[in-house]
Length: 491
Image 1 (tube, one colour):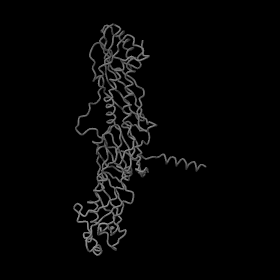
Image 2 (cartoon, rainbow, N blue to C red):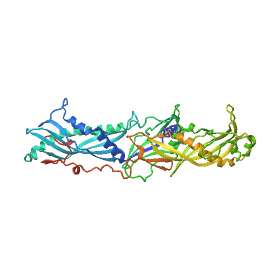
Image 3 (tube, helix red, strand yellow):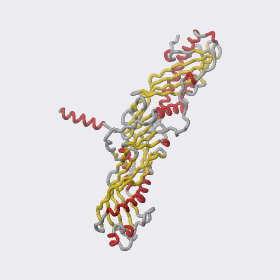
Image 4 (cartoon, rainbow, N blue to C red):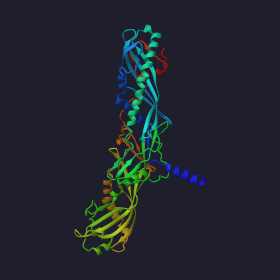
């Protein structure tokens, strides 16, 4: 019984283990950009300020102030910090002017400089399987307040009034802005696990393996991609044999996407039928004419069978699963198949088979990105083996064909492969990521895309400054709070 239980548990553990085929490491560069873009594009602070002056059912008026309005909301400065195993701590520094009729009977202005802080916990949406941020513990911290009230009224009377007013207004006004911005960011994950086509052959989905992990330097998202053929069958990723990981020599705060060689192999399997090629052109590039006369220079038996030259037709078939391998700085595509040559007869006549060769050759892969798809271009690396499978012209030394076949592969076959690869392989669609500026690096068993957001030398946005150095309200007198608005006691 104990042995059976052990086998069941071991089986469950084996099934649960899913080595990711793709890893995404989000540094502070992308997170800063996304939160800032969400603030700018949603105009959320301005919307919240507009809402502040509206009368809502059940809302009690603020004692001592009428016709409340918020204006002149300052452009926010956002500071983010990763919180290991939690998510991101966010501080939004901004300022605004609150106006209204004061208890003294005149127009009153309160110029406020404040920080909004919250912890944005990173979770996984159980229904959709997408990453999502959820705000916790929002607080409003007052940095400075200036009013146009007479200085002889300070500090006692005005302090009581400002405490009461700001306590009621600011938290309810500003904290919803954090939630709204996070909702805006969360929507930009919506397409990450949607199926994306690979030509007409199938689709790829980037499915989250687990809840993203937050460290002190980055957020890591593990994907278990689903590669599915057009007719519905799923192509399994081969076991990588060792855990995938990012090289450690990338700049602090930068972001990378890692695609495993096993994942790229599965994606290319969708295109494998396109790698079966028929070549029947007599003139190909710099090659000599593709006729039995040319072939007879290497195999005299061909001249005996065909004294009068005939055009050649060549069929290449890939009959074993292809494989992508990667060593630092170099990536290869391994192809095993057959190369069969025929003599073409008169139109309407069947092709006359000459011989069939078993082949194994490697193609060197160069990677690039175009229109958010990974592009591959190949060139012949090596013809590794060539052996005769069958022959209608008798025995011959196939090694004599090595140079002829090598040139044929390079001039006739490789261009056909590169044409098939032009469909490109889809990259994950997340946070409006534009891959045009990526830098590509081939490492052990993986391709790493360094997700650059700016070209070298391009001006970057200014760093966040302390609120008190950036926002300077004008007017006298000044009231400097030392406690959080959210905890001010109304007297």
